Length: 233
Image 1 (cartoon, rainbow, N blue to C red):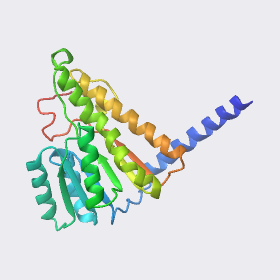
Image 2 (cartoon, rainbow, N blue to C red):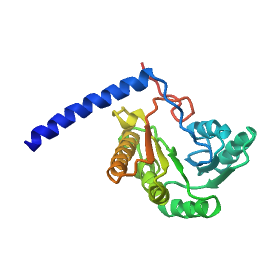
Image 3 (cartoon, one colour):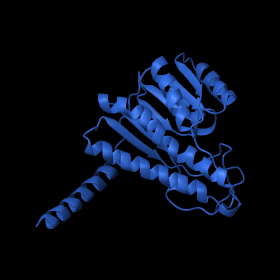
Image 4 (cartoon, rainbow, N blue to C red):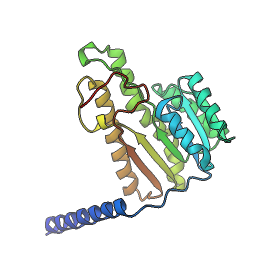
């Protein structure tokens, strides 16, 4: 009997969620108000990270920019400030190093406050066939693209759950949904990022923390320099 009830519930919920998704396609949704939020973007020294920082600039937020490339961070901060933003802070951070992530996170919390929107965007790609990829580079890819998300969640999620307010964003990849020739280590890291973010979203729902939102972004090839030379039909 329980099995039949659970199956019926699954069918009803599936129909409801599909109808909800369809309505969201045809009915414009009100944009999220991020005014006053503290937004941390990893990998903000170039590419998507810099573009997101520029998009957030006019939205009355405090921007916290992380990257291992200090020159890139300075350039992003400069461009953001040119848009009239004064509350921008940047920190050099090697997201592949757990201890560095925790140390810089503590510095941010001490100097700026609790991060309320966390955007895990930092990523690297080797661009080599698997057997041609050095072990150290495979490990680096997994640490930057996947494990760093674990450390940033551990650093910033407790404050979000305590207040039941926040937003976790994982910038993954379409390569985290389907395997790609020549990107074995990259795909593995992005599959891990997607699986981790999905699991954490469900964990938050189960804990009754509906005020902490989650978003997973899976871009295709983007002209930011990271995938120069890649081609597709």
